[in-house]
Length: 205
Image (spheres, rainbow, N blue to C red):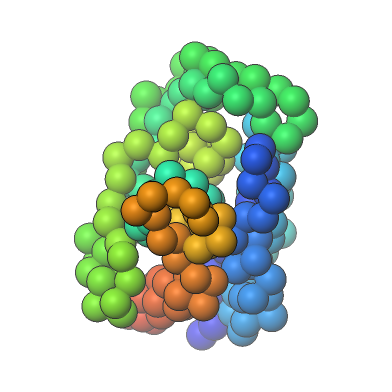
């Protein structure tokens, strides 16, 4: 049985003229059993598109990827918080600072992915990986929370989580101590995640 896995990345935003997660979606496009999409960096629209993709493709698992510009590590996010708290506008010019994502919604949702196993698998592949309990107050966390809220409130059997990727090396040139992570290594990370998820899905039939 072939299980469809949904992967999403984000468009470039703010001062970042390129978003490696969008490039990763291009690289994974056409991979058997994988659906990829590049999501707008816009509150509201990102969650709406995720819901549409889930309805259209009925995936067996989903992983959303975003850029963590200040980290050189792959960060497996453990918690989606019900809070937008960024002074920076999204790509539509909207600022949401200290606002609930879903009024009356749960304070937080945990990831639906096997976080320790993912960190271990990425480390075994020679990749810099860790976990994080704060996906930020910007659109990445917004999408993470909206996706988990959809899954929980509609009772979907859909393991889903969020992974932050580092910038590419050229994006951190001139920043002391920074190294970024080349796109080939980031692609290896995504494929490592896919392999672990596929094995898990195959085990449950």
